[in-house]
Image (cartoon, rainbow, N blue to C red; front, top):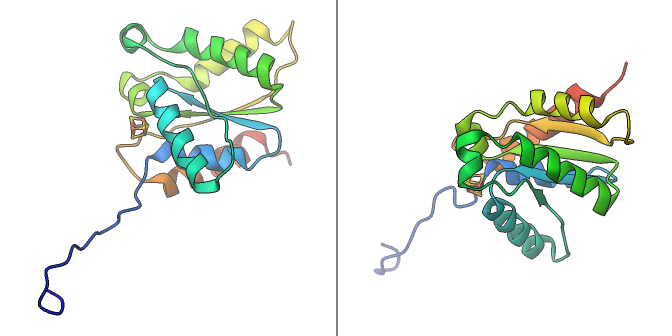
Length: 159
Ligand code: SF4
C-alpha cells in the first residue's frame, strides 16, 4: 500500500528473449543481417519490438520453420534462407542466432554452416557466417547480446 492505495510492483519487467539481444548485436556490425533460425513468429516479434524501440526499419531474416522442420530438422530451410539473404540484401556478414524451437530439436547450426560452405563456397562468394546459440528459456536479451559479441570475436577475429 502507498498513501493508503494499492499499487502494482513489477520486477524485472524488461527480460526479453535471448536471440533478440543477439539480433541487436549483429545489427550493429556493418553489412550484417541478423538471421533467426526458427519460426517466422520469432522474427516478426523481434522486428516489431526493435522497430518500435529504435523507430527505424530493421530487417531480421528467418529460416521460417514449420511443423515438418520441427520433426525432420531445419537445415534445408536454413540453407535456403541464407541464399535468399545473400541474393536480396548482398549481406557481407550473416549472424545466425538459434531460437527456442531449434535449440529444442537440437539443430547443429555449426555443422549446417560447414555443409553450406562446402556446397556453395566454390560457385558463390559467401559472406562471413557467424552463429550463436541463444535458447530463450535461459538468460535474457542481455545474455543474447553478449553471446553474439563473443561469437563474432571467437569466429571472425584474426591474430
Ligand atoms: S519462441 Fe523463444 S526465441 Fe521465439 S520469440 Fe519466443 S522467446 Fe524468443
